[in-house]
Amino acid sequence: DAGVIQSPRHEVTEMGQEVTLRCKPISGHDYLFWYRQTMMRGLELLIYFNNNVPIDDSGMPEDRFSAKMPNASFSTLKIQPSEPRDSAVYFCASSFRVQGNQPQHFGDGTRLSIL
Amino acid sequence: KQEVTQIPAALSVPEGENLVLNCSFTDSAIYNLQWFRQDPGKGLTSLLLIQSSQREQTSGRLNASLDKSSGRSTLYIAASQPGDSATYLCAVLTAGGTSYGKLTFGQGTILTVHP
Image 1: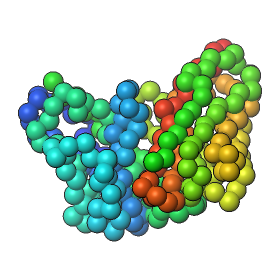
Image 2 (image 1 turned 90 degrees about the vertical axis):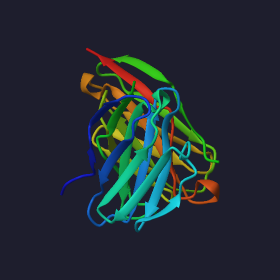
Image 3 (image 1 turned 135 degrees about the horizontal axis):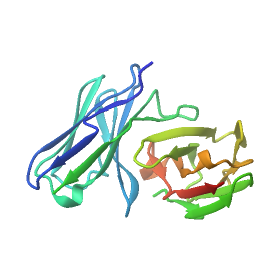
Image 4 (image 1 turned 120 degrees about the vertical axis):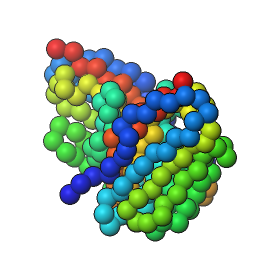
């Protein structure tokens, strides 16, 4: 069974440009999570969805960040306009449900560099 | 708000040594605790998941324990090998409060096992 698939794996772009990160969760998983990892702050949850509906976006740093989940098999995280401090590794994860025996499965991440 | 702390931040040991990584968390209302491994430039690999009702889990040379009441977990690695060198992350899935449903990560322990 395929795992969580993220694209692109690497993205380098100039400040001010729009960036779109993509994620395909594991089929059948009801929950999807977006995380950001930096050296200074470690791994932080940005937003999570349940059945395509955003449940908690309190981790989204600014209005420049937005996330959508138009269907059960696809989600996007968009940054517009991008800034150098957005440079980080962005991970997508999915799980069957939020409860004791259900692990979150992570994608390989998108390494984003804003010049 | 859930907070997770890992000690030590870095550990260097000779091959063959047994070692313990520590994790503590502030809110004991959790669904589970997961230990992950992250290799440089890579995603997260789930090693062990301990449900809140469990005391420990074992996989091969790895053993993880959980003391929910005191907010502590340990990851024990037996007979360490150079291939165990990686960053080990502890994460808790919170069951209540403002962190409900969120996986909160520690800053990680960087492990180096030298031949």
